[in-house]
Length: 448
Ligand code: TYD
Ligand code: MG
Image 1 (spheres, protein in one colour):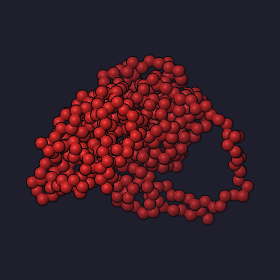
Image 2 (cartoon, protein in one colour):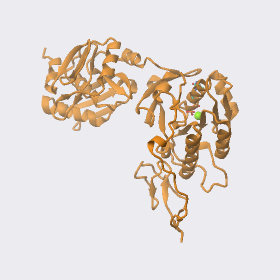
Image 3 (tube, helix red, strand yellow):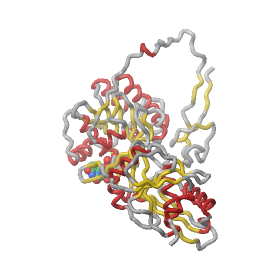
């Protein structure tokens, strides 16, 4: 006998629970649980079911790994060298961030050599036209439709066989009324993605969908799709720089954490190729400031760290940190306190990464230590200097990974001094300051 089970799933992250829960244990979203379609546990598989054909590696036909280059370098690089034929990828970000704008520009460039269909289920064709006129998009091989029915979209794509299908957005598409799942739910989003994935793999059509992040949990967030797609790309904004950062969060065919920079202008998103120059122009040469070079994906970024260390007025010292995990600052301050007997625990620490960028890499540790010391001693670090290195709990300065690209970037921008670990193998024309432990850092702050 088939047996019905009731389950509840989170509309934000698809976490499944046997009972309704107020706050999702996986993504911490409130009131996001909805009842799922009852799961019918079917009887055993019939013994006469069709069997799969098994093949060895040599028998698998090799596919040409064709990539569609758009010529928009920031986009192509983040994608891992352009969109791979037959891949299924998602671009996500807040509403109004510029997803449709970016995709229209990409679609236009790719349509120079390929057929592209842009399904704009979210906006009418008039709205698409307005944007197209603004971006000067006129390619004949790029065609549009505003249908939102997924079956129609899939049937059209199967018939037309374009190289690339863009679906903007997945949340505004729906399956036919005959479908058993409720529109806008996780179940529907999953089913829709499943059909799209089959379309991509079976017909070799690259599919690029957009989705926006919803906070209320009313409509399923694109997070549930992350494990179904080949690549997940986020378009984020950085208010102060007016930049849009395109970031690869998952990429089966490239590196993750790759970043691309764009600027929203009157006629679309323009690439920002000299972001390091912009970061450097903003850098201040004063006490509490240290430059670091962090690699995001394959791209070295020159970032300024700023620390302000002041004596605490109250019992519990403040730690106000942006752009970096506050625990890292607390940890490095604790290491310096332990070995150098500097009482950071009696000081407030304000810390930021200039440019509003977020640093995850541990190669910034040495820079953090130097910025803290520089502010504490009120002494400016040597001009045109960059720190690359990790700090261990035992107070040792450790070598960082992937420094070759960073050093090339450091030299390219005319920086002259490099602070590294003694154990770091480096080849550079810069003046080297090599440190074994945090004790050695005090050499940079001699008593006057
Ligand atoms: P849009 O691509 O519609 O965002 P999303 O698809 O992520 O919701 O663009 C959002 C904003 O960009 C909108 O407020 C208008 C602005 N914009 C420009 O500044 N310049 C342009 O050339 C275009 C097309 C849009
Ligand atoms: Mg849009």
